[in-house]
Image (cartoon, rainbow, N blue to C red; front, side, top):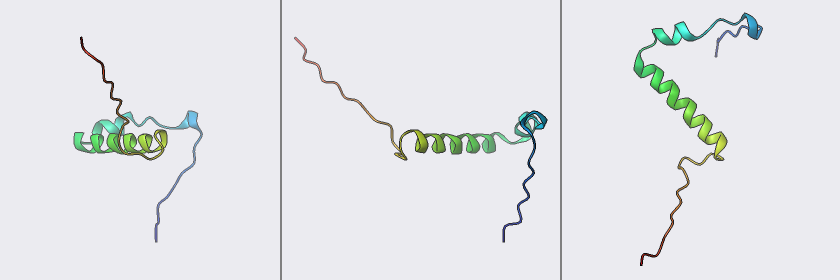
Length: 61
């Protein structure tokens, strides 16, 4: 059973996360950043994990 507590606050009363993230180790911060990136890419690019590549062929003289 999940016993996670959630507290609702108004945005103007919300504390800054800056101090929390400064106390976290670099590896933890990078892992969180990667998770955010993966979530964004999934949302933005319709859940495709790879970026689209464009190939242009030109004729040389």
